[in-house]
Length: 319
Image 1: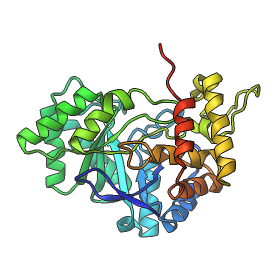
Image 2 (image 1 turned 120 degrees about the vertical axis):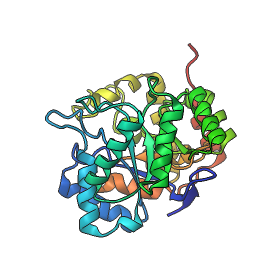
Image 3 (image 1 turned 90 degrees about the horizontal axis):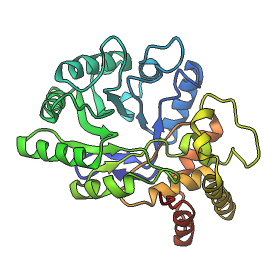
Image 4 (image 1 turned 180 degrees about the vertical axis):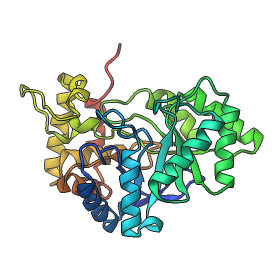
């Protein structure tokens, strides 16, 4: 599988990141193990999860995805073949939230226990924490790197201004700095990444691993005009895309996919891979065919005319 450098200071990673939010949610433990085995055999060995996955499911407390990954790592013996990314900061209940040094120290140990490993390759701030000074948060992450609990650190869901501030604080204080950013970015969600975050990413030479790369499945082409909405667990997440712009993008994906003997999902991921700053999109899979799309997308290169057409049809609508 094609690989890319995760920013100037990060490791070399596969061009597609396997999203772990589905483990314990829409994929059972046995199906998760099956997918993970297939993915690693194909070279799709960069896996992203978070401590919060999947607390939104009734009866879940968070940590379900990490727990399944930990069981698979112990069973498969693949720990050293995998780049493991997880996140901290979103409310886990019982006062467990934020990015204070005390909580980060507790949360990383909880994640390591669930993951059945003694280090995390990429430990990420899942969201901003306005109540904790960035110096304290970055100091806590720096100690994790020093102690070998995290190899690299990254950020998610930060504004451009806060990301730049964090990078300057790390530089001025000799602290471990973020090597990557995980933003919400896809053909239907082009702002604020392109306007607010990309200049900061390019200035500090950060890697970018966008989440919701397939717009919660909408860009796979499974939703069509005039059809009733799906009753899947993700159905409510795509309602905002069921409009003229959304379906025009899907129509273009389907046409381009046909010309490349490919699929809309592969084309949507290939478009992201062709965008400035992007290292490797994150996408999850709930079937073997979905996983095949992720694997194949890493080697699909679109023509300049294809990229331009997708740029035009997906252009954000002026307010």
